[in-house]
Image (tube, rainbow, N blue to C red; front, side, top):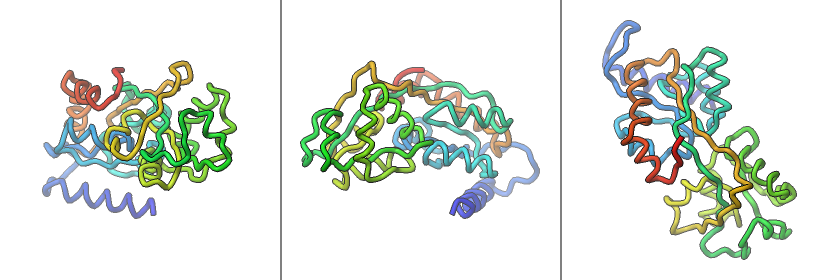
Amino acid sequence: MRQALIALLCAGALAGCGGATGGGDTNDHPTVFAAASLTEVFPQIDPAATYNFAGSDDLATQITEGAPADVFAAASPKYPEQLYEEGLVDKPEVFATNKLVLIVPKSNPADIRSVDDLRNPDVKLVVGAEGVPIGDYTRTVLENMGATDVLEQVVSEEDDVKGVVGKVSLGEADAGFVYVTDVKPVEDKVTAIELPDEAQAVVQYEIAVVKDAPHHEAAHAFVEQVQSDEGQAELQAAGFGSP
């Protein structure tokens, strides 16, 4: 499945080159591999770019296997730093931060008001899988709260944060941990429960230009746009914190 996706991306990248030959850069827009939690905001910053949104771990694997990405933007420093050590991307930079919240369906059938209520044996909890940033951050928060036992209520582990949002907003789960920025697009379907500040994980987003970027100049321009005052304003309007 992953190989098929990479082949599809390669075909798309070639089609977008407008017949350019040789290894030089073109003026085409960049292909940005970005964390799923950036799905709404990145197109606001650059609507002309081509996007591949998924879990940061999966995107890192795709880049490692040769998918034609220009920019990598992850919801955790872990994967950009790994790719940097492998010589696959330029030095990553932090461009945003985030926080976690617990969400429940608007109807809240399990009557969940806090993390403590997740211990009810009838609760169906959905979380990100281990290795996915939202999954790792969730486990950090629960560890900080002394509440890792609630993981016994997990009925599904998702590949990215949008999977968690989808299960809860559709009523297929009673609760899930997501980023605060994921709430606004589904605020008519879910209710967010804030978590204690002292329990929060350190959530940092990093961005880097891919060394073999097909559109190197456009890639650098995109990163500069994200870091610009205008780009930061869009991120903060979406609920992200400053670097």
